[in-house]
Each structure stands twice: as C-alpha cells, then as structure tokens.
Image 1 (cartoon, helix red, strand yellow):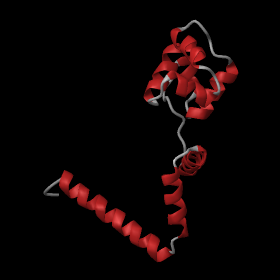
Image 2 (cartoon, rainbow, N blue to C red; image 1 turned 45 degrees about the horizontal axis):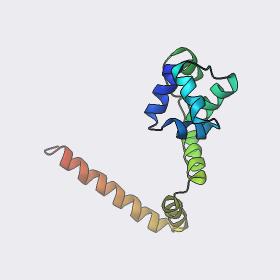
Image 3 (cartoon, helix red, strand yellow; image 1 turned 45 degrees about the vertical axis):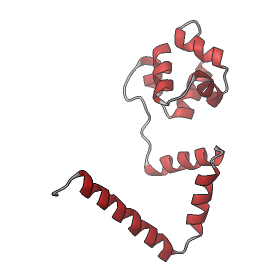
Length: 128
C-alpha cells in the first residue's frame, strides 16, 4: 500500500505535508506510510478514499481503477465543496456573478464559450 499512497500523492501534485493536512495527519506519518515503516489504520485508509475519491480496492490491493467513478451530480457536489473550502476568492466571485446573471446574459456567455472552443478546434484541426 505504501507505493500506492505515494503514487496517489504524486498524481495529486501534493507534497507529504499537503497530503497529510488534507486527511488530518502529520507529514512524518505520511512519510512512514510511504516508506513502509508504518501502516495506515482502517480509519486513515477510509479517510484517504473519501477525501481523494480513490477506490479502497485500489489503495489496499492495487485493483484498478484508481479512482471511484462519479456521476455528474456527485462530481459537481465535490467541486462545490472544494470551492467552498478554498481561499480562491476569484473563483467564488466568478460563480456568484454568473449565478446573478439573467438567462439572456448566461446564454451570451454560453455562446461565447462555444464559439471560442470551435475557433480553437479549427486551429488544432485545420481543414476539417
């Protein structure tokens, strides 16, 4: 399991301190898990799985897939939880401003976004 904890942390782009803070353990504890001198308790395993949406079968035994599949609703809930807990005021402000727009203004933003994507696709795939 130690290699998979390290693999997960690396995949998340986190150092040991950040990873530990996310699940309520110290950096030295994470290091112990990763180098095999400590084994995580069942509670820590469940915390890792819950916090990072990792399959318990993958974490414990290496059985793919690594991540638990989420439907659109679950994914949005997770995103909004993360945004709510973050210090990123720009994202929070952008969501608040967008939410206050009327339907015509939201449609204009939707069209702008679609047109931008289409323009970028043309540049990536000229001649299509």
